[in-house]
Amino acid sequence: MSSLTYLTVLSLLALSAASTATSAAAISATVTAPPPRRAPRGPAIAAQFLSAINAARADAGVPTLLWNATVAQRAKLHVSWLRDSAGCYLNQTFRDPIGSDTMTWFRGYDRPSPADVVALWVTERQWYDRGADACVAGKACGSYQILVTPTLRQLGCALVACPSRGAVAACVYRGGK
Image (cartoon, rainbow, N blue to C red; front, top):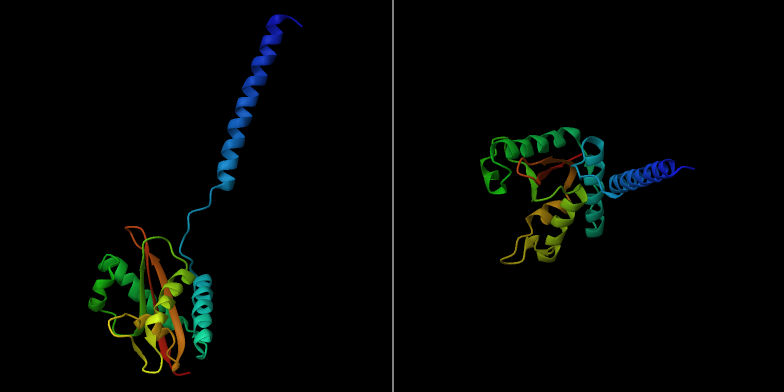
C-alpha cells in the first residue's frame, strides 16, 4: 500500500472515529437528559389529584371523594383567571370574580405534579387540631382542613403553568352526592 493511500485510510478512520464519538455523545446526551416536566392535563391530572387526595383522606379516616368534571371546570376557571389577570399571585385570590367556592390554592416555582401539590397541603396536618376542627393558634392549616372535611364528597382540580415559570393549582370541593 502506498504511503499516500495509507495516510488517506488513516485520515478517514480518524474522521470516522471522531464523528462516531460526537454522534455517540449526542445520542447519549439526548437519551440520558430528562425531558422537561410539564403539568399533566385531562385524565392524567384528574387521576393524580384524586389519588393523592383520597390517600390523604384515607389516612385521616374520612370518606374518599369522587371526581366531578363540572367542579374541575370551576377550578380551571379559577386558576386561569389567576394566571391571566393576577400574574399567578395567590395574594390576589380575594379579587377572583368567579365566585366563592370551598377550595385550596397552590403556587409553586417549578412544574409540580398533582402529588407535589397535595403533599404540600398535607404538611399542614401537623397544625390541625381535629377535635376542635381548627388550626393550632398562630399556624396555617386551612388547605389540609378542607382536604379532610368529612362532609365533602366531590372534587375537581386544575393545574396551569404561569408565564413567569412555575404553576398554580386549585381544587374545588363540593358536598352532597
